[in-house]
Length: 553
Image (tube, rainbow, N blue to C red):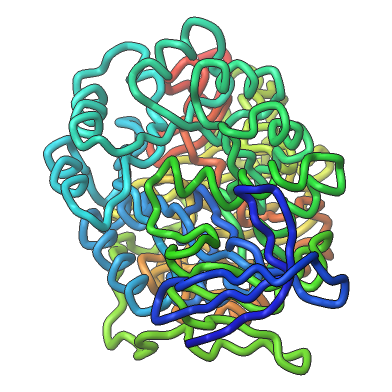
């Protein structure tokens, strides 16, 4: 039996007291009440939960992700594996479940609802209602992942409604994804059985959703950051608010996770107890997660901190195991791994072939061209009309003086299919960047200042079958992602260091974006307004239709 002595943070009674947590096997046998809390003792409180994340976006396999998360006091996540499912289908989901089973960490997997996200792009798989029904019957699947095709819900698309119907019959929750939806449209969306949403960006939108009965997830990821606008929901709607990352890169995970959102909420003036309810209790209730909340007889999932203001974690316990402990300033993981054996073969699908220069060239046409406008920390884009810069051969080229750069998307599932557009906001003064993380179908995406570097960056990733890279005057800096072109098989520390090196290189070349690769990855996500580039062409996400690069067409 383990005995952990400290100040107990009792969320149920909203009180502190000195006590001892007695852990027997994987549960808390009892919590002994000794007396008033003592300032010199550490605090014992329930572990934090990320209520919506795509583990793949950390570029880490679940085992490596867990190692990063537990040091921040996270004991579990609600994971939507639709990134790898878009590449590999059900076999990708099976891989994520298998790898998650090799570590003492709660990964509550959802069944991805939108594979593909839309019918306007090419993905590697298609999960229809019959497949989702089979997944939702499983005990290791906790609900239906974010329904991004909100126009399909509003217009009662038969395939979308069939997916919602099987989820309803399963009795499991359905996550939402409906950015900017308000009024009657929002009511129709929520009334279809969709019980949460992480895409609210304004307090007015979030208040409206909670009044309709939805849970609102306050998101703070590596690219999309909505905490500043939404943190007051913690007190406004304490029983309908949760915290999530959505997408989190490894360098940011080193700095903090849900623990830092709790700390910030309290610092801003939110109730300490309501902040913990959002981070520790509401996800367990809503998703029926098998996670304990520091009570007699519950599963032993809790953390130890010395300062409840900073929420810097000293130890994390999951299922009665000490999965993380800071000893003499060093991070230790005494009981984290069940099996840390590497895989002999890593799953992937990559059928693209090397491109030729003419495939990424764009002839000029009459009129101004539509340009994607990027805003840092926001997944929304704008549609700009700009005069093209044309070279002597009649091809439209990047114009660094106006920050209008060429963007290319390559279909990774069929050789030779390429679309070209232009984007404003990256502010690169030289070189190109490319990635096989391109939500949600994960085709190959690139942005650059010149065609030579764009082509080199693209062809390198085709050669290694997945990753992110930077090409500057023909010189390459890269991070290989051999697992479905999305994840590394290396440790979080190794991936974070390499990723930070690439991002710093881009900042040195003029890019002001906090997470340039994360931002790039969302520039082909057709379900978020306004203008995006998919493998089949330029797409108006507001009106859900393809548009010509040139506005006169």
